[in-house]
Image (cartoon, rainbow, N blue to C red):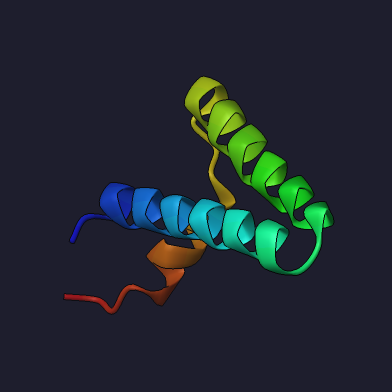
Length: 62
């Protein structure tokens, strides 16, 4: 799986998880949803994504 696909999978998972937690636990989890959305928006404009950097460092050399 490419790093771009991994970033999308992480973002989608975090959004769905925080939406579920906002319904089951506390509405403050929606702030985490907003954070993920803002990070996706800024990375689309600046091409800087902290998760991508982390995933590249974790990727084993081939």
